[in-house]
Structure formats: structure tokens, C-alpha cells
Amino acid sequence: MASGRLPTWGSVLAVVAHPDDESFGLGAVLSTFVSSGARVSVLCFTHGEASTVHGVEGPLAGIRAGELTGAAGELGLSDVRLLSYPDGGLAGVDADGLAAAVRVMADDVAADGFVAFDPSGVTGHPDHTAATAVAMRVAEERGVSVLGWTIPESVAARLRTDLGVPFRGHEPEEIDLVVEVDRSGQRRAVECHPSQAVPGSALWARLDLLGDREYLRWLGPGPA
Ligand SMILES: [Zn+2]
Image 1 (spheres, rainbow, N blue to C red):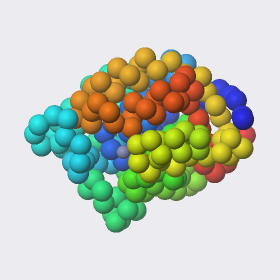
Image 2: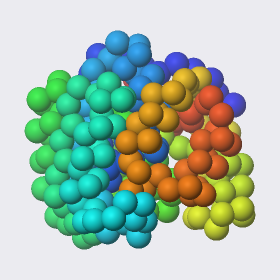
Image 3: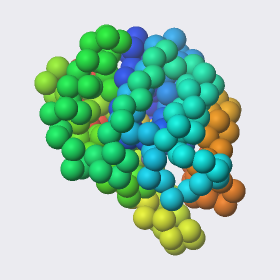
């Protein structure tokens, strides 16, 4: 399996669908970028209001916006923008509008590269796939690279079997970077999302199975 280090980008823009994707999924990768001196920003398309998980009582849109702000502090993010596209409906939204939002933020933070979920969506959520498609489109326009967060297929298979969650992974030969990470910042950020980080969820099993490694693929061309 490949091994490696994250690229030496000065400014990283993560493009995600839901508040918690930046922590539950990308948290260790983003905090590792921050530790290396990069400025890391997040564009999140929805407020996550359609989640079926309600670890905290009350309207999720407002709750999850506040959770994202807390997690951003734990991860050391420079800039976070939360948009109001429909949770669960990103695939049906005008992609030109989504792309325009990515362009604006990429310009504002002078992004050297993007980070996104793998095009598979990783957890099986179609919003993840839609968000990544937009990141890849804008990256291609600009000639910048997208690092896609994935998990090993062996881990995905365990999660499907043990928990019945439709995770999708990649075989070792399809993975470009395996990065050693310190999960302490990610775990603090996860704790900022009590509405979603409920006991017994697949999140905890996945973090345990991944240990101190994260797995990434270049979506489109990697850095020259
Ligand atoms: Zn999500």
C-alpha cells in the first residue's frame, strides 16, 4: 500500500455537505494540515437538518450550525462558511450555484488545493457524492488538485457486516496516500457535535478500525 505525506499546501479548502463531515470524516486530515502550518477552511453546503440522528433535542439546523462553529475551533480552521442548501437534496440542486460558491471561497482563501470525501460518498450518502463532484469540477477549471478521503475496503466491509452501514472503501492499490495522524484534535471536534456523535454509532467503530492512519486518493491529477 502507498505511504506518504500530505501535500505542502499553504491554503487548503475542504468542500463538504454536512456539519460534522469536517470532523467525523476529514477531521484528522484537516488537523494534520493545520499542524503542518497550512491555513484550512471549510465550505459546508447544508445545515444537516434532515439527519435522522437527534442526540440533542431541538431544531437541527440551528443546533448543527453551532456545533460546526465549535468543531472549527478545535480543528484550528481559519474560515468556515455554512450555506443553506437542502440536506438530502444536494444532488437535485443546480450544480452551477454550488460551483459558484466554491469558486468564491476558493478565491477568498487563495486555495492551493481541495479536500473532499471520496466520490463514492464513503458512508453512502448521496450529498457527499454531490459535494465532491462540485469540488472536482472547480478544481479542474483551476488546475488545482483534490485529495479525496477514503477508507480501506477491508474497513468498509467490517462496518457493513457488523453495523449494516453502507460504507464504501477502496482496495490498497487504489489508495495513493496513507498518512499517520494524531486523532486528538479530531476527537475533540467530534465531541462538539453531540447531536450526531451518539453512542454506538458507526463513527466510533470506524475511528477504532482506522487507528492512527488516514487514507486518501488523488481525484484527478495529483500535484506535479
Ligand atoms: Zn455527511
